[in-house]
Length: 277
Length: 277
Image (cartoon, rainbow over all chains, first blue to last red; front, side):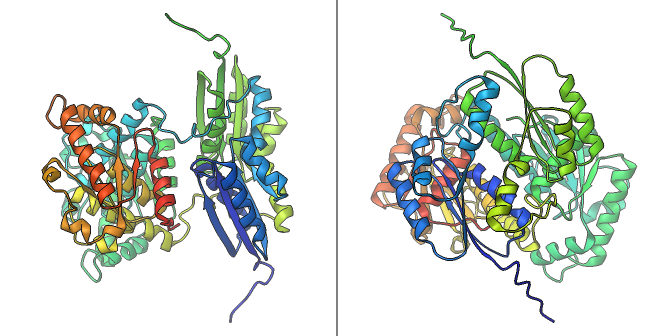
């Protein structure tokens, strides 16, 4: 039987507009709209709308849109660009006009009204920290190289396809954290203790777990109908690492229903490691 | 001579609090505060403050802080948690109470008040797109493997250390875009046209450029005082790729003063490639 909830079917067109990258305004808008579970939502991201001409052209395009609701989120540092939209009577939410006056009052200071300060390259130091962390994650992915674990902030362990590599890369790119990862493989099943290379850095270890059916599904995408992707094999490996984490008192996390952002935030919370920028 | 601008030296303590990851509220708060060029700013990120008890404990901690200004940014979906802070008379900015009522009016719909909707794993389809893009970027990094360029959304080219790898990884993790990268090396200096493997996918190419002094500095961190990091070598390679981009009409970008976020957004804008989630 097919249910159609007519109340929920509402066409919504959303614009995220910025005179810079627009990454923050998009993240905020999506977070807010996720609370409404809209079924028909059309997103338009307009970055680098940084001249009055570009803003006017875009305002005309938006006004010409017909049918359904239109929501515009913007983050214009330049007040002239904001004016284009307010003059054109477009209903919109601008992050700067929303919060900057209040912060000016709290801080008793005028804002600088400069674009590109949030997602700019910042300084050379920050850039190098980021590159260093990425290089480290790539060089120490999948147990490839375990000679420099003393330089790691963290060594992630877990079975193949439990989310180690994406997490390490996210930690490096977004947080500047140097994370290595080491796979616990089928070959380790007869070992009931940590491999030597890991026991030396036990205080840096963090384990990942995943639901057996989810793991099987993910492995099956990679190597369909193999021993590697069999339910028996997945279960054995997961049982083994779970026992290992408990015996060795290694903090761990079940990643089944978590995004990479959530896994990374949880790891920081549990280990107390702080982001580097 | 040392200048100290006494007006700017103001101690500010900032809290980013959320009942989930807090990634969006932190991004927004930092974007807004970047407009004030604060010299002494102490940031505290408090994620997963998801019970009334945790919120109360944190409110007490914040009230106990002495000296300087305190700014609290929060994104509490749960109204009970917001109340803890308003009851305690802490001056704070909450993203949900700020915008949700207005969106409810525009959308003529109540919000669901559920946490974890913004940064959740979403669906299996999105998860797999992300993993696939990361696997692709890793397998096709640094010209390693060029057999599957037909599956790439984009092939980034440029000299060593111009930002290709970090950009490809960011595009994969944050936008689900499959980007390969191919280095134009010193060995290619005698070639005045594109390598065959690249000319086959010319419509997917995007070139990176970087200032020669910046390149030299970055290379010098990697291999100090080598030919690779010499100014002459850097200049020759950059001249070569610049000529190549212009002759072959390949779109390109100077990455010198750009962050990875900015490079990625600019590439999307110039190529028209759309993010996959």
